[in-house]
Image 1: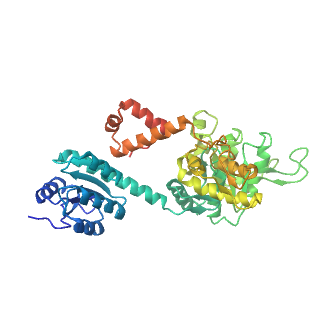
Image 2: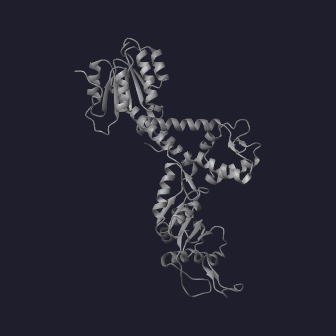
Image 3: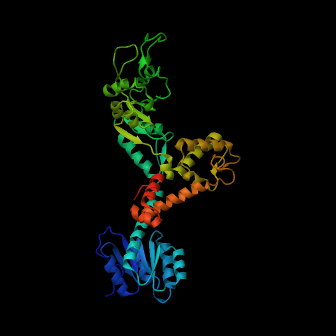
Length: 460
């Protein structure tokens, strides 16, 4: 019995979509028997039915026989259709099947975008593996394309289009309307103060003060006075009352940067404020009520500081009601072009040299560079380059990332990049199965585990 176009299998509606193209009714029946349980199926046997199913069915994978009417004895019609499939559905993965094992046809098919190539008679188990792999590749590529189309977002002075930043923006918007303490964590230069300001600006306290306290920049002998203030006569030079920084933030937010540097003697007094909402000035006995929200930040591992006895555990948990982790720049390379363009526009205005632009080939290297100093380093390099560049075109040497001969990455960087991408591809193709991926790569499981750890690769 002939199968008409769109003959569906018994799989669920969410099943991957497989289009089988073959002019042999027996082979179509065999394919239906083999794949109907796991895939939504459609069938075609000539150019007209293929083009119809591409539009109606939108297949993720196409199993395409090259020998089709009107010239079933050669591959011309199949190759022509392969080209059309890739033109109309670029993301579709095409597995070519042919009764003519001519290597030239195989090369032509791969050159036109075929994912895989099989000669008849086909081993259905092998074909099933190829189809499953092709579905996985299709979905990975679709997800990547969707991620790249996400419009850039801003929150205060924070900019990003990556998934990591989108998650952080969402968390900031959820926590901002509350008055709960927030602990902002992340490496140096990631923009922790900008996150704190965004929380403040998105809150009902936005019209109130935002007071910044650098706990690591105030001498230990002065920090209590800075935080809590003093009464007149509290010490020799205390001629008049001085309101501390926490009190100055009343009605708004106090941002305690580098909270991990707060001396241990001061930690109980800060804890007292967090618990009771009151402060006691130096030289005074009265408690003063202060309505200030606390946001703290640290680039240190406060959990390790608690374990080491240099940071109070009760203070740690009081500060960490909500934790906002700011991802380092190397974890969100999709944001680098956006940030680089933003900083370049800012440098244009500051330097006044006219329209600045990056030289060809600069942006891919910026996206690959690990940025140990994070966003701060990126901004500083662009700002410096806008001053020292010999022209209005910013080259790698102006950014301090090249030697003037094109700024080529080192061979080690090239090898590492290629190795990482190859490991990621193997894991993707084998759906995160380390044993199968290691076998495909020709390495042992411990070696592959070491590579996954080395490059910080997330398994699918």
